[in-house]
Length: 284
Ligand SMILES: Nc1ncnc2c1ncn2[C@@H]1O[C@H](COP(=O)(O)OP(=O)(O)OP(=O)(O)O)[C@@H](O)[C@H]1O
Ligand SMILES: O=P(O)(O)OC[C@H]1O[C@H](OP(=O)(O)OP(=O)(O)O)[C@H](O)[C@@H]1O
Ligand SMILES: [Mg+2]
Image (cartoon, rainbow, N blue to C red; front, side, top):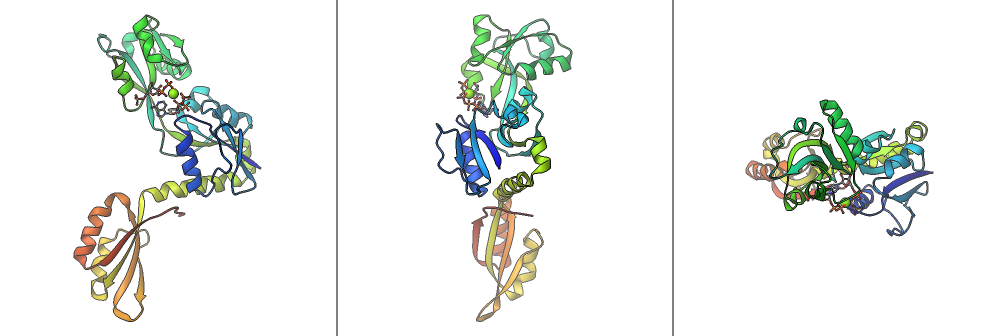
């Protein structure tokens, strides 16, 4: 049996559940108040946990696989296997000071106080710089601390930057770049092939997100020009169209980012009836 720990609430819950569904491992009978949920594979169960607790659950074997933020993994110093960047939940830990402060670099904070929800990452950052500071650990509303004399600077999560601006703070350094990762217990990973299957399934969803499936009809004498337009992945699949010897059906996988330009060029090359279709999963 493999237990996968996923965030029970907060901003990481919904995208995690969506990704698992796309990977063919939907959270069944889910509900934020429940501790456990099943999926379609009888050998896999979900455990709902706080995002911040997941790294330690994985390290200690309370769960075998986990999905949570890299910042939380690093902060807890958990000894886990980092398998895959899931490319969502992106945020930065930034060093910020009041907007009217004359401080413009981390080095100028020698001997001062820095408030944060991430004391270990913060201490490590300043230690690497050779700057002595006092870390003040808070568990929320960090942005307020420089304005009430508790700290001279903060290290806090920023994504859009709105919270910093609203609280009259300015970023002076980037301390840590985070996104959400798939992690695993080191022992289970060695002994149980199921984790690799889970990783492959999730990876196949991520790979497919950047691709589109193109289908089109091509006059036989335009095939060579059309093939030149279609960037590889082993080249397009070319099929005969029944009852029409002069037309071929051409299928190809292309980068989603280049779809606009590619379709334009295909038209020019003589392709017709072009269909652009999303791909659910892609295995190499
Ligand atoms: N704008 C953001 N603010 C806070 N955390 C973010 C943001 N964007 C991404 N994250 C990531 O989300 C994770 C924190 O999720 P968590 O569920 O603990 O907090 P939350 O969504 O703010 O919920 P809570 O209401 O419990 O604070 C971290 O890994 C963090 O990097
Ligand atoms: O750069 P921004 O897009 O403004 O996002 C960053 C803010 O969002 C988070 O707070 P959250 O909304 O989770 O509230 P919390 O402090 O109660 O967790 C985080 O702690 C920052 O304060
Ligand atoms: Mg929060």
